[in-house]
Structure formats: C-alpha cells, structure tokens
Image (cartoon, rainbow, N blue to C red; front, side, top):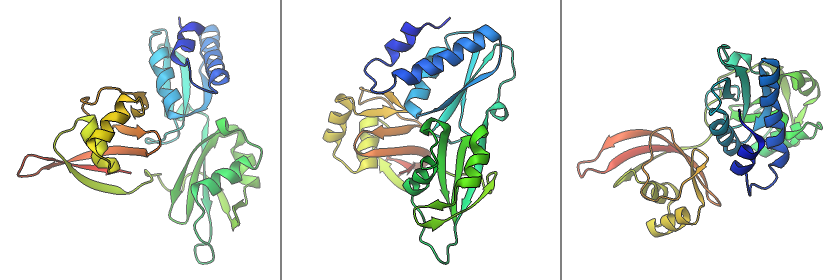
Length: 259
C-alpha cells in the first residue's frame, strides 16, 4: 500500500503541491477502504505523471488518468480496485462548446476563456483543458459543475458566448506544425532545433534541470527522444515530437513538431 511518505518524497520541493497531493492520497485511501471507484480533481501534467508512477506500485488498485479526450494535458486520476473495468467513460468529466459570432468579434484568447470560467467562482482544480476551435472553444469541466457553467458563462472578455453541452468537435492539439531536420534524436540536438537555440545552450539548460520529457525531469543530454514525447523547457515553452518524416540523403532525420 502507498503511504504518505512515498508521496511526500516524490513531491519534495514542489511549491504549492502539499494540499494537492493530500487530496489525491485521500482519494486513493478511499478506494482501498470502500473498494469503490473514486476520482481526483484535475491535475497538471507534471503532477499527474508523478502520481501515476507512485500509485502503479500498488497492484491492488488501478490508477488511470484521463482528461476528456486523448491528448488532454490536465487530467483526473481515477482509482478502482484491481479487476474493475475502469475506462474513460467512467470519469466525471463533461464538455461544453463555447461559440462566438465570428462576423462581429475577434477570437478570444485561451486566457479570456479561462478568466471567464474562473470568474464564475469555480476552483481551477475543477477545470480541465480549454481547446481553441474555429469559432470558439471546447471546455472540459467537472461533470457536476457543467450545468452551472453552461447557464452562467455568457462572455469571454468582451465577447458574447453561446454555450451548449457536449463537444461539437473532437479537440485537436493547439499549436503550429513545424518540420525540422536534425543530425540525431538526442535530447540536446532536438531541443536546440525545436527552440532555435544553440546546442551549447540546450545542453546547459538540460544540465541545469530546466528540461522535461513527458513532464519528467531529464538531466542527460544524450537521452533519445521518440515520437509522441513532449519536451518542456522552463522559460521557453513546450513542443511535441509529433512524428518522424523520413531521412535526408545526408542521413539527417526529418521530424515534425507541434509548437
């Protein structure tokens, strides 16, 4: 069974996470005690990865993360006794489609939608991803608050919104696709190309513990990256290694990233 010290050690030095991991640990204990399916609030990607690594050590409890769609970043962790059929449909997550009139309004930014949602008095932990779409956005939210949000969310910034239940379209990853060629798939090489910095600076950032792969800290510049990996550099942003795109005649790797 997982104990508090195991979780505490994993989150040591992580600012502002004490209350968060205590709540998630309570959900885990409730699952064990009641042999019931229980769920956390929405968590940021780094916390989700850390929690899953810890809880998957307990073979008597399933731990699964889901955010409402395949590529979600903010996710809820669901716990269920071993043998339960836990999947995405069990998660208490609802989607809302937010639309505005493109003829009369400029597109609201992500921060405008988030500000509008939090302006209703909702806790950030109850709100998942907000995915921008043509003419609006899709908001993922705790299911028990979806009706309240739908009834009261009428503006994002100064832009009027029309809100309906459900996702009008399947969210896609936000960001621009960029094609690069690199000499190798080492982390320092890919990071250098993806963020348009020198390889020396890339290596320094990695050694300085500023670089993460899939929200896990990496300090080895030579670590290879693979399709699907998300590379985060503190202060510079985040990219996803979407796919390989063949090799050039000189043996360089073609790859596509989403930035």
